[in-house]
Length: 219
Figure 1 (cartoon, rainbow, N blue to C red):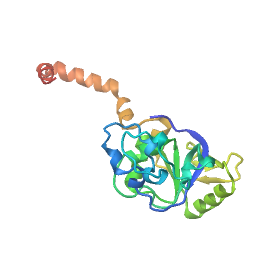
Figure 2: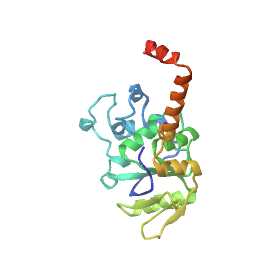
Figure 3: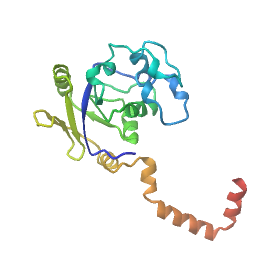
Figure 4: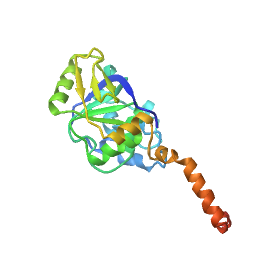
């Protein structure tokens, strides 16, 4: 998982509340056993005018010109601005994977569904909770300023403009912050103790050498 320290990016406004995970990545794309390749199908039913299927070449599909992420001014967006209860619906890790693989680094909303919120951190995607008043103000600012950018400083727990004319603090659990700053997912956290794990396994096999033969037979 990549480290998240400071990120600056164009903001794309998704002016919808209760965006569910089936809208983020429709159910037919969950057939894949891989953790990659979901970016082209992010918001598939909103981004394209046809029905998408796994393995389809998205470069030849007709785009919906009215969908925000298809508009030229948001082509390079890496911060998504949304309304309340973002990521509701079924539990699927594919939703934050699709957002991240599309290029989204942070999502700003007044609230998130709990499971989606937790899954974001496991993928290195930062969900930022601001008040509805603050989010409303950002929607107005984005609409009035093409190419509007925000800087997210995780260490300082602030999001705002480079010149400081807009600046909001946000809360984050200390352990989640540590994991993002260090680029540690669940596997990375475990591998910090790789030496201790190897030492334990060596002691275990030394005290019960018959396990080596058993493991070999099963392999």
